[in-house]
Length: 178
Image (tube, rainbow, N blue to C red; front, side):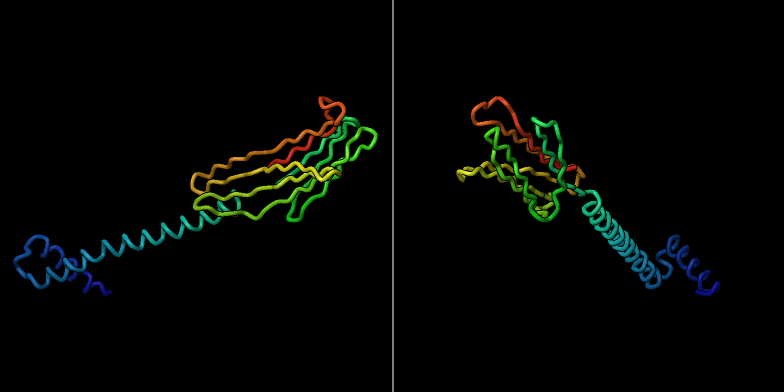
């Protein structure tokens, strides 16, 4: 826009603001343009805000929901602690102490992230099988609220003891989200 055209345009705006009855068709055109600019600016601002919100939401889901499932097995007879990282494949943990009457095989199986509205849920199923086909099943769960950014984790701790001495713990298995 040239300087002369800009000065004329500014002069018309001032003239329309001070004397709207002087040239009604010109003032109506200016008024229509002015009234159209506010919704367009609002829509542009709204579009930019939505784009930023979606981008930050994606960043939060990818970076804020970093749940690394881990298992910790404590052997009370040897006082050894073994750490297991639970990835996409099931982790097999044998709990065998024949002299103590212990023969259990546990499998830890993580699931994919499940989206329910603004919540993201992930779980790890713990299935421990005894030689006589009895089983213990437990589930560790973590829930991430995308909107609030809160994480709620329900870890699992399972104690294994001797069948003859039930109050003597031989193993402790803890599954948690770090």
